[in-house]
Amino acid sequence: MIKFFVILLYLLSIFLISIIFKKYNKDSREIVRKIIHIGIGPLIPIAQFLKIDQNSALIFTGLVSLMVLINYTYKLFPTIEDVERKSYGTLFYCLSLFILICLFWDKDPYALITGFFIMTFGDGLAGLIGKSFNSKSWIFFKQKKSLLGTFTMFLTSLIVVCSIGYSQQNSFYLNYFVIASLATVLEQFSVLGVDNFIVPISSALYFNFFITH
Image (cartoon, rainbow, N blue to C red; front, top):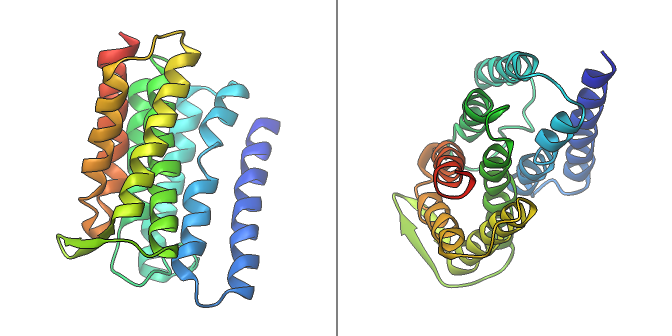
């Protein structure tokens, strides 16, 4: 029970930070959403450290996914979906986490964390930096992408993969670049927020197949 209290306390702290930020930055709706997006990143390592079992993690993630689905209809927590475009990114975010937990919670937690971190930190920071600083941009599937945001996605993904690979005592080699490049390319397909699904799943699968095993 204490373990889930710690998880809930962490989640509440992230939402509280986002609400306070929004109060003083009313024109930064996308940034507020990214605070939540990035802030949830450490949740998996925390849950692993607390030794929460796979079934409990799946139930918790499933309940959160259901709440997010209900929120699309009733807007109980408008901060989560307060964006300037139509997006199901938060739902894809939860669904990808649910699948990652199913596949890798006990089998390969390193792959799980890799996929989740690339989504939370890579995609999150790419969105923040890409919108905060001007750089060359283009339109891909009606979504605006920037050179600086794309580079941030690649660099962050590479750092994540190298760090987790090093923690497994794996030497630095080409597959690290391949995973970072794959994640960066897939992040371009962000229509309706689908990148929150395809990026973490693909990154975790590749890491599991080519690095862990």
